[in-house]
Length: 273
Image 1 (cartoon, one colour):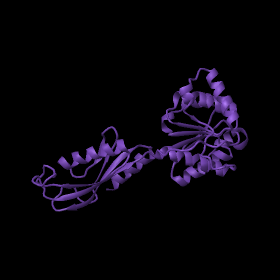
Image 2 (image 1 turned 90 degrees about the vertical axis):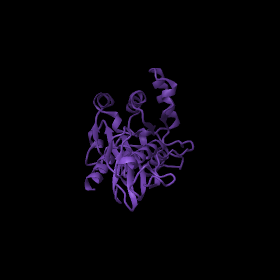
Image 3 (image 1 turned 180 degrees about the vertical axis):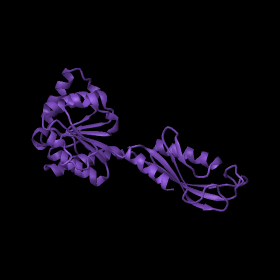
Image 4 (image 1 turned 90 degrees about the horizontal axis):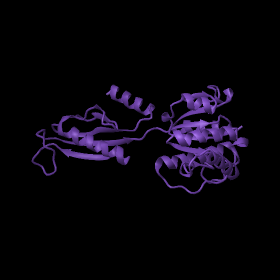
């Protein structure tokens, strides 16, 4: 039991989606006793068991469905073949199996370690989410400033994209101090990063950055992926309030909830120093 719980924790730390099946109740003669667990990954890899045989195949199918639909449930099984709807089994008992969908933990790349970036990181800690920080200024990407960050990336955009694996991140939030750096990050992100991209910006800054990206050959459909100005329209002004609005918008994207148009904020150049 300890080993399977440790495996679950490793998958969570890796940001992996998976399903967990647990025998919640067992009566009579059954192959898997109460508390037995099985993990199923999206690629079909299995770890642990709920008893094997026909029961396990049914449970594996339910786990695959849970991963696709991103929700689980409680399922009852009779293990005597002559009962209507029962499994083709001679065990004679009955089990209830809880299927849980384990969503991947978001991993936010905070591009800009100023005031807003710091508040976003603090909220990620409260949410139990992972975050990393990227800044071309060493002191703004330091372990001292961001003690709980997974990665402390002191790099220019050119160096960052030359050496880093973007697949570890689920969302990128641009709260940098330089519109030139933000534009360069966006130029690479829309071409190489499949996840969610948000940028703090006034409408004027957004328009100018998009104009520059278009001039460099970025297609309109790629630019439509950029959420800017980022953040829900709650009248946010301070770095802490802006962080709340940004994380609320990311939560809505994770949960699949529709949102209203974001409100205009101050430019990243002034609000994130």
